[in-house]
Image (cartoon, rainbow, N blue to C red; front, side, top):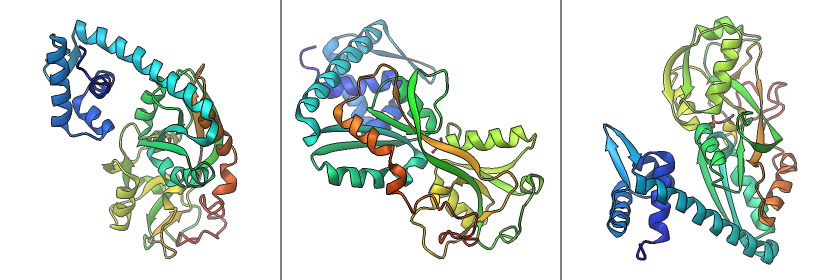
Amino acid sequence: MRHSTIRQLEVFEAIARLNSFTRAAEELFLTQPTVSMQIKKLTDDIGLPLFEQVGKKIYLTDAGKELYQTCQGIFEHFSRFEMAVSNMKGLKSGKLRLAVVTTAKYFTPRLLGTFCQQYPGIDVSLKVTNRERVLERLTGNQDDLFILGQVPESIDAVSEVFLDNPLVVLAAADHPLADQKNISIDRICEESFIMREPGSGTRMATERFFNDHNKKLKVRMELGSNEAIKQALVGRLGIAVLSRHTLALDGPMGQLAELDVEGFPIERHWYFAYPSGKQLSVVAQAFLEYLRHADDFLEDLSCRHAISGHCPLLKNG
Ligand code: PGA
C-alpha cells in the first residue's frame, strides 16, 4: 500500500470511527463522491475490501479492522511529533485543535480572536458540533481541547468549569407571556415547544428539568440549530429553552423576550476538558490558562443582568 496517502487514511479512519460515509464527509468537509473515491483508491491499493454493507449499516472487514488499528497508531505518532515540534517552537507557532458544542460557538471565536492576536503564529482549527459528537471526539482523543457542558462520569477526562451557561425560556417579544411575572411551569407546559435535536446538551438539560418536575412538554418541532429555533420563535411557532449566550450579538431591539418562569434560568456551566493522561501541548496549555480568565474577556456576553432588567438584547431587559 505504498501509494496510499495520509488523506486516504484520514478518510478511512473517519468512516470507521463514525460508522458512516455521510458523517465522515461532513466532518472532513468533503463531498460524498470524494470520500467514496478515496476509499475506492485505498481499497484497490490494499487489494481487499475494507467495509461491507449489511442493509443500511456498514461494518469493517478483518482487513478494515487491522487498518483501523494501524491508522490509530499512525495518527497518534503524528500528533506526538507535531506536539514535540510545536513545543520546541514555544508559542511562536503550532496548532490548536478545538472541538466545541454548538452553543459554545457564541463565544469561542471571540475568545480565540483575542488569543490569536496575542499569539499570531498559532494555527487554530475549530470543530463545532453537538454534545453527543463532541463527547465522541473527546473519547477518541481527536482534538487538543474540548468545550462543552458537564462531562459524564463514565468518560475518563479532566474537566474544569470556566463560565456560566444559563438556560432561559425564550419567546417572540410580543408573546402574551412576555409581560408576565413568575410564570408557573404548568403554564409553560401548555405552550407549543420547540426543542433542539437529540444529542444536544441544551435538550438534555431541558428534558431533565421538566422530568424532575414531573411535567411533560408539548413538543411541536425539533430543530438542529439555535439560530433556526430563534427564527421559529420570531415566527411564533412556539417557545423554547436556549442558552442566554445564543442572544449574543442580536440587535438592540431584540425580537425575542426572556420569559420569567419559575425555576429558570437552569444553571448550566461551560467546561473545558481533555482525556485523562493526555499530554497537553504548550499551545493547548496556554489556551487553557486563557480560558480560566474567559469571564474578563466576555464582559458583555452573558447578559448577566438580564433578570434584573439590564440586558439590552431582550424586550424584558
Ligand atoms: P448543545 O450543547 O449545543 O449540544 O446543545 C450545549 C450544552 O451542553 O449546554
